[in-house]
Image 1 (tube, rainbow, N blue to C red):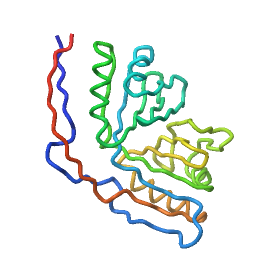
Image 2 (image 1 turned 180 degrees about the horizontal axis):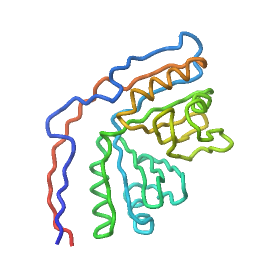
Image 3 (image 1 turned 90 degrees about the vertical axis):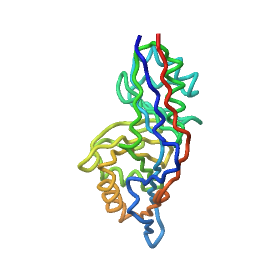
Length: 224
């Protein structure tokens, strides 16, 4: 019988983590700002894979979210957000420190079903664009049609962004999110600040460091 070891990625001792954009200070446009750019760092990002028929009930029970089965759908709730990436792949983003607990609960709920859950938190960060001209900044940055008439609230797509790639999500009428790879973070932020200069853009960074202290868990279980 296969055996699985659960490892909490947060060590027992308190550690200080840095966001991918920790080197950038807050900036202000100097006038009336029509775009606010924020980094929402230190969230837990999980990739969930499996057949939707297998996952629907467990996801609803553990997360309280309806698994989106339509392409490009994004659902949000108290637990976090869940986005369709492909017919058997979803991106789950939850508050910092919640990923390990939810991952374990999902594994227990799914039992011996065929699925995969991978923590990709260290390789991604999330940027938020808010304001009346946020969509104009995006129109300068991606070839995908982000016109509000074609890109409703609750949609998320993976597309070319500048000369990189990003997951583009519309979470409110004027609020958008970009999920970007850590290695692209510096480049994408500089691009956005330049693209938003004509509209007046303010940048609000994440805190320089976040201290996380949790008991490390190493638990090996036999799965039937």
